[in-house]
Image (tube, rainbow, N blue to C red; front, side):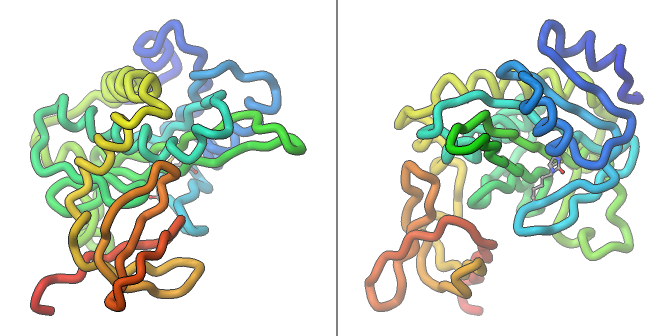
Length: 254
Ligand code: BTN
């Protein structure tokens, strides 16, 4: 079923929503709205993005008709900004659980996997005016019926329709996702949120490699700090915190 202004407005009422058939990036549209007094919880959603962004400067493709691409405006205190990754990934994971999908995992910092393949990515962006945090734009991309055949993503990505083997209504999915998001937002700042995030992360305790701004770090994924940093125990016993990077779990015996 197609995403339209009417269906989205009805599914998300009374939440303030901007719907685009096509937009550059919903995160950019949400950032503009935040500079123009958007309320907390307002959502920008698009059927297609022509300049979607992923983490670490990557491109995020959102062709028309196949995915969820949305950005939620969060007006939260600065001390909670580091937990937006946790709230976003847990909201996606809970939405997938509600669809009775098995084998859901969060991969630090902000990917959601099903059966080891990526189904969703989160891109939180803080928006500042001088030294004042206007809010955080929580970008969420979810693969619903993308066709990855013949692309490099075929081996590493999956979609909701591929794992449920039935058609999905994207307006209904967004409604559930936002309900779950509201639920996890209530736990911001609590130990419960961090506990749930870590509990959904099977890579903890596993040998990993992280590639990020600080180069490549190898060790065992030991823990996640309240500020979202991944703690890696290196071979010499030293524990180092990493704030951003791409994790690869090292296969045992490899
Ligand atoms: C990643 O896994 O690298 C994060 C991907 C985030 C994609 C979403 S789609 C909606 C929002 N708008 C964007 O330009 N990016 C995010």
